[in-house]
Each structure stands twice: as structure tokens, then as C-alpha cells.
Image (cartoon, rainbow, N blue to C red):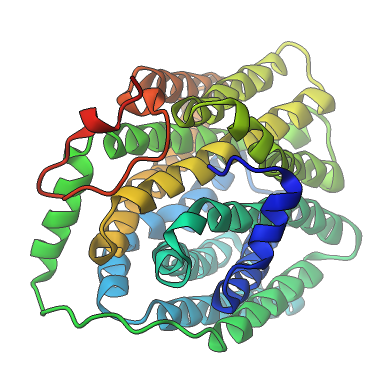
Length: 429
């Protein structure tokens, strides 16, 4: 993490290469489109299609399943071919999916199976974009600017996460779902246009290898690294808990907290507001803390947020729900920037796509598992059980990172040979 003031960070960001500027603006458009469409899907499911907590859990499963199924093959593809082309094609797929939903809304032919199927297709585009983007950064940004570039991308994502759900809720609640999906499609199309003009530096030719051999090398590198493994496990349990909560939150907010579509959107948008606040505070926090302690903040805030949401079981409150989602954004944004920077710093460029894909598969793959678990728990017991289960998952992820070697890092470590990882040399004395 950079140890600079907010003004100097902004100045440094303005000096980032033109290719990165295009990537950053494309990222903002793509993330905004995704968040608007995700919020709209859940609200349409509950208010227009009468979905239960079990139904929204299954919908969330469909919208996150591509992360589990496709991250690895797309990551291997990104290591062999143009990452810009992959991202452009991915975002184009999302445009088509959103236009199909818009058509179904306008013709009153939308139902839950179609909404889930098109959500699956749109998420396929999201997976390819998310796998390729972190892998592209090291090739267009100097090593010294990794943290700055990642912070810029995460700040854009924070804005999208704050404005997207709130805007999606307002559009669905005030003027209809069609406007929400039309806006999402337009933003995705703009992201495609920005990517089309991005110049990707040529890479050295890589001898053709078998898919399974490349996958094995990437897996061994992650599992044998004393820093990457605990970060992987922390992210898995965070996403597991988050999506148990996400699977049932909209029906819970509507039926137990008594919120309308617009207010649900506002509480979901608080997640992004927290991300923006966390991203803006990151430079000042980084100046005062060792790198390892910075990694602990996000998981700790996640645990606190889950306990605040559990408190709504005994004290139903819009404000408690708002505070919970704010905390879920404010702390974990520090985790995302720091963990991404660490991964880029210690991973060889030739393995970046595979490592990103493996981590995406494990962490984002926990999302459909969490959503499916939320659907099962709500059907077997109640939404109350889902909130408690989510809190337990957040407890596990906080404990993993606190006791790991990563929590004791003094600074960002140097890259090491993947065949001989010596984490002890990276520890703070």
C-alpha cells in the first residue's frame, strides 16, 4: 500500500499510463453495469415475480456459478492470448444478456428461470473481465505503481457498488425494471468501446503446454505459498458468509424490516459508500500501519458487520442494516487493494492469469456455494439461521488471517522463484 497523502496519490494516479486510464474507466462502467443489473434482478424477483428467500438464493446461485465453473479455463486462456480481447468479448456478452432481459421485461415474458439463465450468461462475461483485468495491470503499469493502480481500480469499483444498487433500486421502484436493464446495457457497451482503444503490450511467446500442466503449476504455486494460501482461505470464507447473507437479504429486508424497493437499494448501496470511504482513507491508514496489519482490517470489519446484521433479528432496523452493509464495504476494500497488490508483487508475470483464475475460482466460487447454502437454510429452517451461519463464516475468515504469516508482514515483499518460496524472508522482524 502507498504511504502517501490523498493529494499525492491523486497526482500519482494522474501519471499512470494512458492504457491504464482506459482500463480504469472501462472498469468503472463495467462494475456499475454489473451492480445495477444484480440489484435489479433481486428486486424484480421479489416484487414482480413473487420470489421467496429460497428463490432469491437459487437466483444468486445462478448468477455466481460461472465464477466456480469458468475462472480457471478463462485464466489459462488469458495467459496464452490477448487479455484485452478477452475482456472486450466478455463485456459484449454481458451487453447481449442485459438486452435480452430488457426485451423480456418490455414484452412481459420474464420469469424466474429466464432471469436466472440470463444472469448466468451475464456473469460469464463478468468472470472473464475480472480474471483478465488484474493480470493486465502489471503489463501496463510500472511495479512501483501497482498499489496505486489497484487503489484506483478499487475506488472505481467502490463508486459502482455505492451508486449501482441504489440506482437500480430507485429505477425499479420508481419507473420500472426496463430502465435499470437498459442503463446497465448502455454502461457495458461504453466499457466495450473503451477497451477497444486500449493498447496491450506484446508478450513473449510462450511454448504451448497442456492445460492440466499449466493448471497444476498455478495450483502448486498458490497452495505452497505461505502468504497466498491464507489469503485464499480468508477470501473463501468471506465470500461464503457474504453470499449466505446476500441470498436472503432482499426478502428479509422486505418482509422482516418492512423496507420498500428504494430503501432496500439504499441499504445495498451503503456497501459501496463504505468502499468509497475505505478507499479514500486507505493512504492515511497505510501510513500508520504495517502492511500485514492492513490485511487484518477487512476481515475484522466483515465480522463486525455480520454481528450488526444479526442484531436486527432482535431489533429490526433500517439503520442497523445500513450500518452492516457500510462496514462490509469500508473494511474489506482495504483487504482487496492490499491482497491484490501482494498477489501481483509475488506472482511471476507468466503465471499471473492462472493464479488470478485459481484465486477467483476459490473465492468467487464460494459465492454460489454460499447462495445455495442460504437457500437451503432458509427453506429448512428460517432466514434467522442464515444470518447466524453468515456470522460464523465471517468469524472463521477473521481467525484465519489473524493467525497467518501474512498478518506479520512489515511491507510488500519481493517476488520469489515459484520453485523455492521462502516466506520467512518476508516476515517483519
